[in-house]
Image (cartoon, rainbow, N blue to C red; front, top):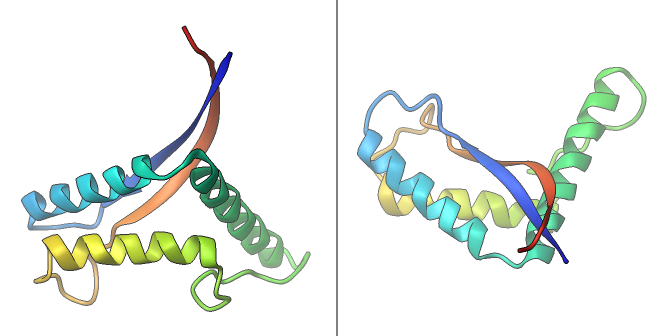
Amino acid sequence: MKRITVTFEIDHADWTSGHDDMYKCVDHLETWFMGLSLKSQLSIYYAQRCAFDMAERARFKFGEAFDPWNDDCPVLEQVFKAQDRAIKRFAPWKPDTGFNMELFTTGVELEDEA
């Protein structure tokens, strides 16, 4: 039997201070994502891939860009809201610029179960 895993990373590279709070935010977001069903994780993976692919094609004039924030993608909206909840809960002091934190799915792995 095979097991499917959606891999991800959380980008928090521009945090210049408040690292204890940043790690709490990252842990919270990681726990949220890991708690989603495989179906939800896969829908996020494919929605992100679609958004990136459409943006790349638009850059080379091969189609329209997809702007997940402004085009109301319900799948990606749940990611944006989870990121926002984590920051508001653990780093309410954060200024409006910098200190970004974003969850990006990086792949889908298929593994044999033992």
